[in-house]
Length: 478
Image (cartoon, rainbow, N blue to C red; front, side):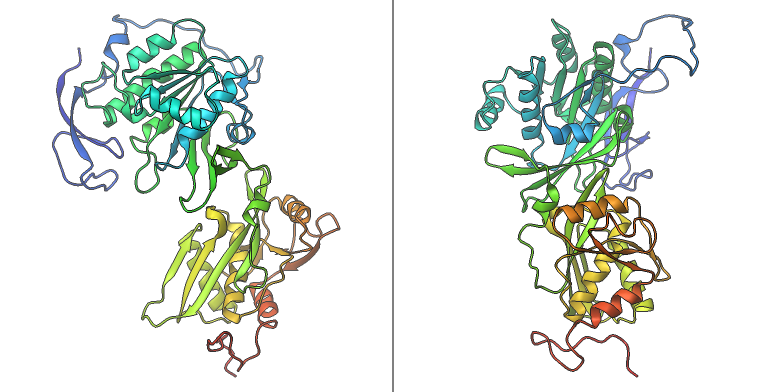
């Protein structure tokens, strides 16, 4: 039998220590180590479910050749959710869903539960944070009270598994949330690393043996990471992140890990009075209400998985009175912005060292694609020079440290999406995808200096003021 003694476990990364310390050496987190009581060592785990035997059994080994079948999927009834999961829920799979408090996780799962229940599937919603009456109130507000969804408020994992095993196996079981669950095989408080790991292990074992698709709702930390040990993310089949800004009505469902589908797909939703509404054409929604006549705005033709997406990049370059000018970024990588600013100064002849720079991706979307470099550079030069970019033009391309504009993948899909939304011209790297389908004019660039010269030539002439500001300095003093 495993020896029971006191251990100290980091609640962020799961590192185990034999005494308390203020900082975790594994993740450098402060005040994250908590004392826990439980079994440790190689025999630690769900003791009650482990058979007692001296020798193991011999099992059959198979080769790589053989019949391969497509994993059976259950459509959720929400197209954007099916896109992220790869076509629906795989039977026996476990999905970990994370997101900020109040972002709409429970609303999305309630709508998916009702949609699946109306197709005749058995769906069970287990809430560890709310009472059954509170869940019913949300369903009534969303107009879903008529759906045959089975509800329960329970936190004991063994009781949940035993209840779900009665009768026909559910097609979908939702656990909201995994941090509130506890198992009798672990002597720790609910929410600790040991309890979260043990509870997740029991639920995953049930999903694999019964064929039920299980969704675990996880809390997130202040850094936006799913709380608890990272080992839970490795145990599940898929990890999804529900993102969005409280000030915007857009919500993005992004697949971080998916064993049965792509990991770079997104689903776009709009928060309404009646819950989350699907957005089949997110490009038109992100570009709605943009100011065509304002300098410092550029339209970026990006890709999220297999979906082309057009978003507006907003930049503001203003003279700074500080010794170290500010660099504020929302929705993009700050390190990437610093690189683009350095390339513009070194190879574009633009002096930005004495200016504050503010960059924003409109709509609350977060972009991590390097192809946004060209659109960001165009917005920065436009704001500095006061030149308005053509409203019917899109930009995409990666900028190298030498100032060269490098080709990016899936250029034809970007051009097709821009043409569908009425754009007439695309500024892009020279190389793959040039010319589009013939109906869209393309301007191929080799170097960032070519674009800077073209935008600056359309701005106010040197010596003229713009909106009360002094004319910008491009570095051409001769």
